[in-house]
Every structure is written in C-alpha cells, then in structure tokens.
Amino acid sequence: MRIRVFKPGSTIFSNFIKPKFLKYGLIVFSFILFLSLCISFVFEEILSGLFFLFILSFIINFRFKRKVDILHSHASRQSELFVKYADLMDLIEKEEFDTREILKEIRISITGEEKFRAELLKIAQLIKNLDYRLNIFIGPVLNIFLFWDIQQCIRLEKWIERNHDKFHFWLDKIGTIDALLSLSIVRFNNPDWIFPALSSESEVYLEAHELAHPLINNCIANDYSLSGNSRFDIVTGSNMAGKSTFLRTTGIKPDTWNVRKSCKSQKL
Image 1 (cartoon, one colour):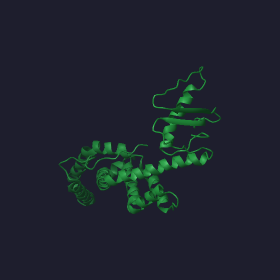
Image 2 (cartoon, one colour; image 1 turned 45 degrees about the vertical axis):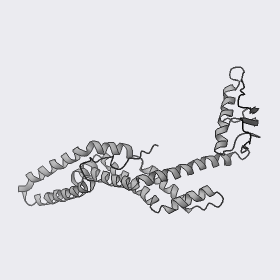
Image 3 (cartoon, rainbow, N blue to C red; image 1 turned 180 degrees about the horizontal axis):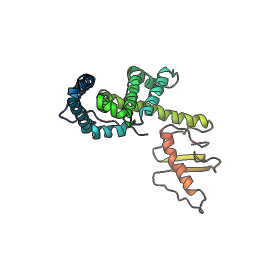
Image 4 (tube, rainbow, N blue to C red; image 1 turned 30 degrees about the vertical axis):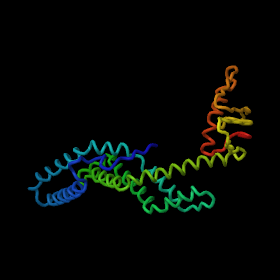
C-alpha cells in the first residue's frame, strides 16, 4: 500500500481562503441552520428562510466536493495501515535492545517523539471519519447540517501542516526497522548460511565455494572465482542448464554483502 504525503496547503483550500475562518464560519452556519429548523416547528413563517439555508448548505458542499474527493481518494482505506504503524511503534518503544546499537538508536529516537503514536492514531481516526461520506444514509445528513466532509478535511489539513516534516522522519525509521526485520528473518530461517568476508584487494576479486541461488531449494551449487579489473568469463551450456540462474546468483551476491546479509554459500 502506498502512502502519499501532501505538502501543507496543497489539499483542499484555495489560496484566498483561510482554513480557520472557514471552520468557524461553517460552525456558525450549522448553528443557525439547527436553530432555524427548531424554530420552524413553532413559526411556520420562516420555512422559506429555512429552505434558503438548505439550498445554501448544498451549494457550499458542492463547492468543495471535488477537492474533498481528491483528498479522500488518496486517504481512504489507509486508516488501518496507520493503526498498524502505531502498534508497531508501540512494540518498539517497549522492547529492550541490548545487543545492536542501531536498534537502540532507533528506539531512542522514536521514544523521544512523544506524540508519535498519538498522531498516527489521530490521522487514522480522521480518515475513518471522512469515510462516513460513503454511507448513503448518514453522509448526506452530516454534510447538510454539519459540513462533515469539509470539517474533516480541515482537520486533516492541520495534521499535515503540523506533522509534514516529522512524518518523513517517522517513515524512515519504520522503513529501517522493516529492512532489519527482513534481513534478520533470512538469517534466522537459514542458520547455515555464511556472511561474506570482504577482501582488501584493490582490484575486482571474488572467490566462492558452493555458491547457490538463495531462492531455489535443492539447487546445484558451484565454485567460482574472479580477479582482475580486465577479466571476464564466458558461460556456455545447453538450454535449461542453469546459465541464467548462475549469472543471477553471482550478480546478487554483491548486493547481499553490501547490506551485510548472509549468503547461501560455504565460503565467499
């Protein structure tokens, strides 16, 4: 699932209108609409004015409908993702990492962000609130009387302005944890794999014994060595003999040792 991070001021509002003025103006309008509706049960003379308020409410909602649709199309169905991220950060904050300095640093940086989990849960709830517009019975009522969509978009806009810079930092920490988890799972599931040893040679140097593709079980392992900047080897063989698999195997090994990942080999 992809998360799109908006820049402040880029979602719903035009440059000539301030969100805070719009918010309080709609609150006052909603109060007048409710008050007029209640009074209309006693004084039928104001029904025409009430009808005018309903029409005006419809026009205001229609005025912002397209911008609300754009924001909702990017935010909808991502509330559960933010809740999962919040739960993940809660687990990281409670975990004690005694061995790896990088995990300690991530935990300390996340713990220092006191509002991290609360802000993720807040935007998840805002997205859920905006999803009420999908209910054909509740959505129209909320929008006519409370301008529900616009009010939720105002809150989302404020959340973006408040956390836009921090959010990139949070995603970076989440991505680092995710990458470390992936590498550790590979190591845990394959304890017989080895970590490559780096050579001090100034030229290209590769020496491998029983090198095998990490994604193929029960495959044939091969020995291979390569040294010198100007050397190249030609791989030949019949169809389906494993030439492409061998090339992929040797090609992905530099990536694995660059990230200090274990390799499916006896020596590398």
